[in-house]
Every structure is written in structure tokens, then in C-alpha cells.
Image (tube, rainbow, N blue to C red; front, top):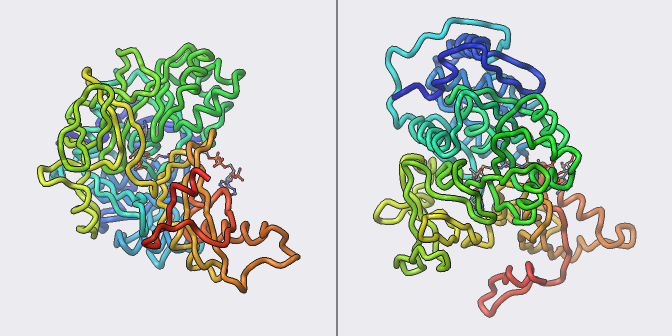
Amino acid sequence: MTELLLGLTRGGPTRVTVAGTTWTYDDLLGAASAAAADLAPYRRVAVHATPEPSTVLAVVAALLAGVVVVPVPPDSGARERAHVLGDSAVEAWVGTAPPDQSGGLPVVPLDLGARAPYTPPTDPLPDDATAFLLYTSGTTGLPKGVLLSRAAVAAGLDGLADAWGWTDADVLAHGLPLFHVHGLLLGVLGPLRLGGGVVHVGRPTPEAYAAAARDGATMFFGVPTIWSRIAEAPEHAKDLASARLLVSGSAALPVPVFERLRALTGHDAVERYGMSETLITVATRADAAPRAGWVGVPVAGVETRLQDEHGAAVPHDGESVGNLQVRGATLFGGYLNRPDADAEVWTDDGWFRTGDVAVVDPAGWHRIVGRESIDLIKSGGYRVGAGEIETVLLGHPAVAETAVVGEPDADLGQRIVAHVVLRPEAVPGPDDLGGAALATALTAYVGEQLNAHKRPREVRFTTALPRNAMGKVQKKQLVQG
Ligand code: MCA
Ligand code: AMP
């Protein structure tokens, strides 16, 4: 297949800036070629995916070496990290390991200053070779490893290049985490494939996005929480007027935020929709007039359909709601070690069940209405399984029962709320009025076991959870109440 990092391997003066360090393509290619030589003994490596130059170098080097990359969120807690390292069977860390938590694996050091000539592989990898193993939450259990091939990543990026007229003339700016599809695969590999520049701004504040715009960035990526904060900061938002394209994804962009951004920047943000398992499947084209609340049309190489709960086709009439299914070149190759999960998501005729509920209009425009399961929460663009947090909380000695839900939140889309029934002996006494200290301890416990963004924003103590006659917790009542 064509080299995944096509633009980068041509070298040249195009700039890649991460956390204040700037490389030219020539520099990055030289450093990554040097590092790739050290990765020859390995098949699968972990990358401690901080938003720093070492992460970009580690990922690029591994891709050049044909080694599968497993990005590990830098704030992963003990339970989550042990699961990712064990399930993926990675053989080493590249660059740095998390402090005191290498899991006993060797660390292959990186030298940002090293340079070696790039030599195209004499024996290119097959298209279906896995490039990434990305961990993403399901409704229950620990995160599942999503196997993404080089061909799927290439097809996904080429589809977006076509949709957005994204070329080597663009400079992309964003401040997204470097361990997900959005920030890493689209936000770093996109430019490196298409030949454009990229600036990772660090924390994605309105100030940082405005500064990148003043420095000439043409495209901006953000989750709705980022766009909503920019829309609340008119003095910074106005600087984005000089951009070519503002792109929102990972969760629904609220219509008022779309409208406010239009008023402040003169741009209609384009939305796109996707998943870790499918990459970006539906996007608003840059040459179409964006429609607030709609995510666009299938990208090149992708087909979509709607079905009802019995598997019957739902008409694409702009009103009828159905379960969204997708197929095409951008799809993953399955979950690692999880044939049970694979069986759940693939239909007999080879379509992927997204778990999202949508409407499609006769022109092929898609509107995402919500999710089938109340147990998948999107908070700040992060996908979080309610069951994952419940399992951890139930492991805390104070907790007898718990139900975790996502409640609507103006900033985060959804905020994680844990309803907790305490064991009688754990009910706080007068020294912890209202249980504030215990709530803080439970929140911290989730952070230590899973990661920071999976911490509940709120813990509500109750004496009983609402249950139906079968004893099943009625989560809808918790969200409404
Ligand atoms: C956060 N904080 C908390 C809690 N949560 N403190 C106590 N309890 C909690 N439960 C702290 C944070 O650590 C931080 O502290 C401060 O509160 C502010 O947190 P927050 O409001 O979360 O703001 P933030 O840290 O600035 O994060 C907002 C964010 C972030 C930047 C929008 O959520 C983010 O990066 N989201 C991107 C997720 C993403 O990339 N998803 C893509 C998945 P302190 O200030 O001390 O640090 S890929 C995908 O979805 C598909 C493919 C797609 O379509 O793209
Ligand atoms: P993740 O696997 O973290 O990649 O999350 C994928 C999920 O994010 C999808 O199944 C959707 O529920 C949600 N999502 C992504 N983009 C959008 C969007 N533009 N509008 C609404 N939901 C979205």
C-alpha cells in the first residue's frame, strides 16, 4: 500500500509543533527513522501518550518500523493501565514509561536529536496490517482494544481530505489528547499523511486557539466542550475569523454554540461523526452549507443505513429514527481477545452496529439523535462506560450499591453522576457532614483506578436505588430526577 505517512516521508520544511518544540518534516523523519531502527525487535509497543513531542516521535517511529502502537492515556490509573498492558501484550514502552508504573516492561529510549536517513521499506506491510490498538469503553467491563489497520487509517484520512479539501497548504491546530482517534489519528497523522503543518497548542483554551490562528493556522479541531468555551470568550473567538475551517466532533455540537461561533467568527463549524471502531464515517463537506445539528454525509468509501429493532429498513426521510449501521474502508478489524463483543456489533450481512440512533434525510444528511444505551456516557468528548465506573465503586469498602449515569451538562455535554448506597457502617458521622469528604474519596478512588476524566463530577448518596419488579435499576428515573 501507499506509505501511511505519505507527506512526512517526502520530507521538507513543513512544520510540526508540539508543546513548543518545532520540527520540520526533515527533522521529524530523521529522528523517527533513527528511532525506528531500535524498534525492530518488537511487534507491539506502548506509548505513554502525553501531549508532548516524545509521543509524536514514538508513534511515527513505530509506524515507520511496522510496529503496532498502543497509546496509553497518561493519567491511566492502576486498574486501567494493568488491563491495557496485559490485554494488549505489549513488549515495551517507547520513549518514557509512566513514573514507577512501567509494568515491568523495558523502555526503548528516544533521542529527539538523533537523525538517520529514511529508507522506504523493501518489504512493505500488507494493507490489513494493524497500525493501532486503541482502547475504548464499552457499557460494562474494562475498555476493549480496537484493532485499526493501516489501510483503514489511510482511507479515513483520505476521505476527510476529500470532504474538507484538506491539503498540504493547511496548518491544523488543536489541543486534543494524543491517545484517541480525534487528537492522534486525525490530528497528527492527518497532516503527516496529507503533507500539511500541525500545531498542538497544549491545553485547548480559547487563548491558545486564538494564538494559533494569529500564527496562521488554517484548520481547527475541537470537541464541543472546547467550542463552547471558545464561544463564551468573544475576545479570543474573533481571532478564528482568519481560519479556513472549524471542525467539531466526538459529541454533538449544541445548536446555540454553532450559532454563537458563526456570529463571533463568521464561520459555520463543520461537524463530523465517527467512532474509535469506524473512524470518521460521516462529515459535512467544506463545499456544502453546514446545517446546525446535522453531521453531514458519508465520507468516500463508507455506506450507512438505518434499521429498526427488528432489523427492518428505516426510511431516509429526514424524520424516521433508526439504529445507525455503517460499513466500508475505514472500519476496524475487530476487538482484541473479544469474540463476544465482535459478535454483538456485526450484523450477519457485515454491517457494524454503531449503537447510535440517527435520522437520515433524502439527500443523505445525517442527524445523530442519541445513543441506544444509557450506559455509554460522553463527557467532554470522552467515551465512558457507566458499568466500568460502577465496578470500581463497588470495589470500595464503603459502597453497597451504585448506579452511574450521564446527566445533561452545558459545558461537557454529559456529566458523570454516581448514585451511591453506602454500607451501614460507612454512613458518614457528624465529622463529615453531608458526606463531602467521602464523596471526594470515592471520586479520587475512581481516578486512581481508571483515569481522571472517568471521575464522577458528583456523588449523590441515597438509601435505595429505584428498581423495577425484576430488581433492575431504573436509570432513566435517576437521570430525570
Ligand atoms: C475534571 N476535574 C475534576 C473532575 N474532572 N475535578 C474533580 N472531579 C472531577 N470529576 C478537574 C480537571 O482535572 C481539571 O483540573 C479541571 O477539573 C477542569 O477539568 P475539565 O472541566 O474536564 O476541563 P479540562 O480538563 O480542560 O477538559 C475539558 C476538555 C477535555 C479539554 C474538553 O475533556 C478533553 O480534552 N476532551 C477531549 C476528549 C477526546 O479527545 N475525545 C475524542 C475521543 P486541573 O485544572 O487541575 O487540571 S475519539 C472520538 O470520540 C471519535 C472517533 C470522534 O468522533 O472523534
Ligand atoms: P469514541 O469511540 O470515543 O470514538 O466515541 C464515539 C461516539 O461519539 C459515537 O458513537 C457517538 O455517540 C459520539 N459522536 C462522535 N461524533 C459525534 C457527533 N458529531 N455528534 C454526535 N455524537 C458524536
